[in-house]
Image (tube, rainbow, N blue to C red; front, side, top):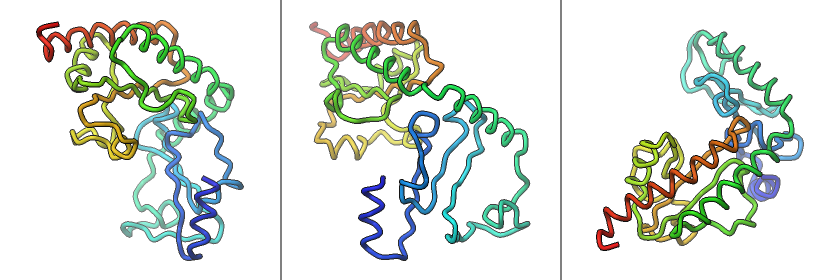
Length: 227
């Protein structure tokens, strides 16, 4: 982010750099002094808090235009009565996340264990990027070359495991992720995204790997009946 901020600053002073740090909150350090952003947003639900409430950090001296006017709440940025119970819940979630300050290392261990189990038990599975690549600590992305992702996801759901093809904000589209396209991954390779948290357990990891092996076997019989 600091490198991106320096590049943006070199283009002109009037550019406002906003950072969506929702996935980072609670797992990666967010130091507003070093990131170079003008504004940073986080959300409670990624910290096991209530949905529908978040927080915006705005650099001193920066201003934003509200999307709509009204009563002037939220420092004239978002009119409407604040959801006080959700705000309190957000505060509790942040407090618990701070108490579990070493959660990132624990989540990385779980992610690595999940990936190792998957690649050992599911023959066609491949990592989306080299495993040594710096990446989010709580996301395991797996490719299934030659297999469609959607029926695998349904089979996983039947076994109590919920994964996705991509980000939650793009679940209504079945087009391949632009990120996967940029990585040169063919559309024929089904992509699965497993999200972990500091509350995930080893038993859940092992169950997810077994469930994926069973699901892939079921789907392979559907799409490759001769096997």
